[in-house]
Amino acid sequence: MSDRFDIGAYWEDFTPIERVLTAALGIVTLLLILFLGTGRLGPSYFLFLFGLGGMYALLSLGLNSQWGFTGLINFSVAAFFGIGAYGAALMTGSNSPIAGGFNPIFGLLIGLLLAGIIAVAIGIPTLRLRADYLAIATLGLAEVIRLFLQNERQWTNGSAGIRGIPSFFEGWPILGEFPRLMPGLEIGIIPGTAIVLETTFWRQLLNVSLMLVFLGAVFFILRRAQRSPWGRLQRTIRADEDLAKALGKNTYRYKMQAFVLGSLIMALAGVFYAHLNLFVNPGDLDPITTFYVWVAVILGGSGSNRGALLGGFVVVAIREGSRFANDIAFIPLDAAPLRLLLIGLLIVLVMRFRPQGLLPPQRELIWPSAVGNKAPSGPDKGVPQSDGGDPNE
Image 1: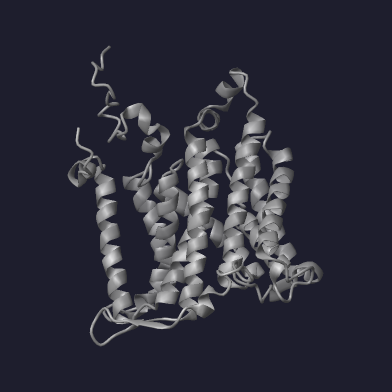
Image 2: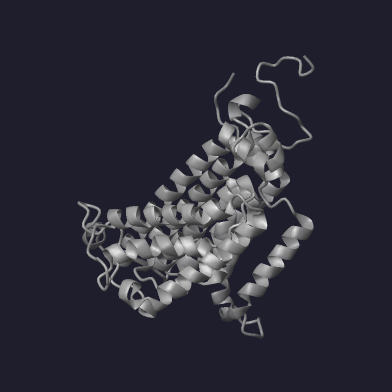
């Protein structure tokens, strides 16, 4: 059998929606190249937006591990995001009222530790109750943490926020000096225009590399967990918790594990944001952040890790892309503030025509070795036999 890569066969294995999404991704890529080449979009700003999309993808993966896997309704996404961001900022920021000046690794550890402690504290009294109690508790938690950070000047610097946060690789050998050592470059893609790559670009490139490491590690862990016995039990709890209890499973313990895991991922996104934006304040914990993340998970498909990745980047594309709508001459109104309307319309269309999401999780639930190293194209095609035997045997 030939080992050559057959792109035609690979394309045939795509579902119709995956083909549409692949074509749309190709169009978006061409537009980005055009905008970069003409100078309408700066390379440093593009990398910043890409990092922001990865941050929302991390938040979506965290919520997906709670809601998509186990059915836990968490309305405190912004709170755990803020805990991670403030944990990193208070340990490293120049105007931190507590510490400041520490290596960003310590900020990462403190942010994750605080998120884990608070997740356990909120989960102990609520996870034994019905799902709506958890929703109410997490909604209140988000607002309590936001108001605490806004009004507690002695510990958090209040509404002034934390400034002077270094980049994550500040002080590291080689990587710490990389942006300053790289020369400025001019690249001409379209005649008459040039892309200038300066210190800011190289710094953002390091940020994107860090985001890809975080995103890849989290995606790999969740993908393995989703296909494991632990993941199958989590889906059973979501579908019918009484059935899981009848099988002798301690559902409270498993729900606590999912809740803490998702909260840690959200805090990790907050740590990344602190070192991406270099400034945090209580406004970053606005409830609209939680709304955006829920939209991303619903859009991609509840329980789908691929969908969470897609949803995070799509939400940022709509949110930030609408800022440039005013540059389009034929639009007769101020289109930039319409981002919430566009996102709301997107939810309505998805729930009407694709309620399972754009990338439902069916393909992610089966080990490739179980289907002959080929993912099933759809439930109507069945599971191919890896040894060529009779499927009726």
